Amino acid sequence: MRATIGVLVVAYIVELAFSGALEPILSLRGLGAGFQPWQPLTYTLIQGEPVSAVFGWVGVFFFMDMAHAGMGARRFWVSTFITWALATFGSLMIGLTGLLQATYVFGPWWWLDAMLVWFAFKNRDAQVRWMMVLPMKAEVIAWLVLLLSVLRLAYYRDVASAHLVFAWFAAWATVWIDGDTWRRWKLLRRKKAIEKELSKFQVLDGGRGQERPRRQKPDDWAN
Image (cartoon, rainbow, N blue to C red):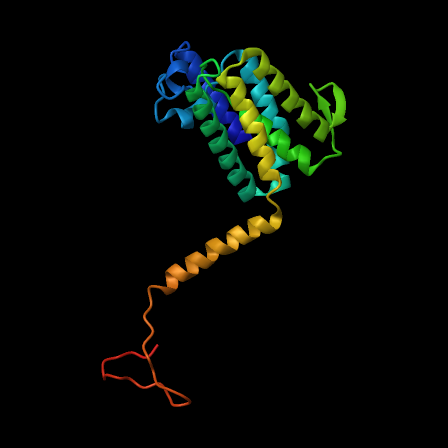
């Protein structure tokens, strides 16, 4: 958590040093509207106005450790990757339709929404202070965040608002991949690694029945 906040703070200092010149270069832009291949990897680090940046750091402070502890390290980072990939892909595709206004997509808010979703649906009855004031159940806050994102999309009708909605649903989908699914995935990876390792060896016929293995040629090894 501290390392993530540190990266965001350093990135914001660099952003301020360039006086906004990095935003059009590093923010996610639509295909055919200024898109560059590095933008999917950099748009999260562009944080906009100071108030928005500070609230982002506060969100990481409150939710990252709780989501990480509740899911486990591997599942947390795999879910982060899935959410990022689906939200980014969805934003690029909806931009191609021309149904929404083309805007820059930037900031870590998609990730904060995802961490809130993971924490909330793993700890449905946990009490969280909405806007650090009003105590509410974590699950209720997650649904309120979705409602606000949908209302923002309906009002602004832009790609940046759609990106948040895509991220919420992508994070919600990863919640329902249960522990057995993750264990099967890990076992399948282990199986493939073992098969790859065994493929390096060659097994020679060492005999039949109960006889001792014997070499077909004097220079053969019986394995």
